[in-house]
Length: 292
Ligand SMILES: [Zn+2]
Image (tube, rainbow, N blue to C red):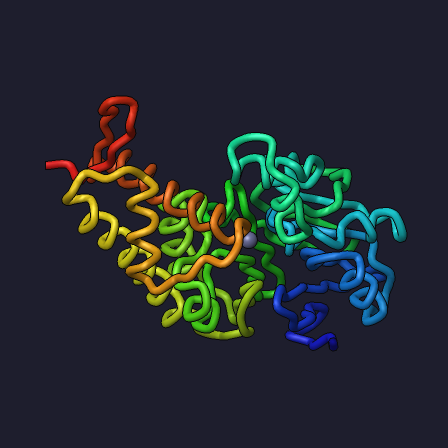
């Protein structure tokens, strides 16, 4: 594990979940804390200055799993956007919303549930000054309810607003909470002017055009495939199985299953609200079909 300089006071730690580090006059501002305590401990050893601030882009456990350790050990001041904040403080909410009720123990793993951590301040989009450094909090909702990115010195740490080619090849259908917002966020990124972009799962890049198109293509393909399958009225379970088979996705455990299920629900919600599909209750069975 190493820390690399991007420009000025902005650094990052390349990792399956990249961490951004911004140095102020006497401290380090961390953006996200990684999967767990073990990672956060190693991360702290790399820092030139003590960690005093921690910004969470969103509440997924791989981005805030190190929070509790950083809070206990260094009393970091934690900042997170609304909704994401509540999940970071009450992490049972993540497996709860994915499962839809009290989640079985199998879903209460570190991949879906970080250790709880108090959040000190709610982040709002706009300017944020921490000591002598001014950051910009950029709204990037879609992948999660209220995800934000962090911009400083023409560098945007864009969290999970878009996924790398490698991640797309691996997962085929990435996690989305709100499809409409996800697409609007891609549009916002397209219009934005930064020298560098750093996604959480991907490489630092000075041009995200190809990635933007690739991410849009995934959303388009999934939507089209759903519309094709729903030419025949189907239950959700039927649709999900056919969709996963069509994309050659083999679900191996319940964690993966609830993530894909939630994502397909996001697409149905979007297609229903946009008027492309409709749903009907027939003999207590919920059927989905394209709108004719
Ligand atoms: Zn995420």
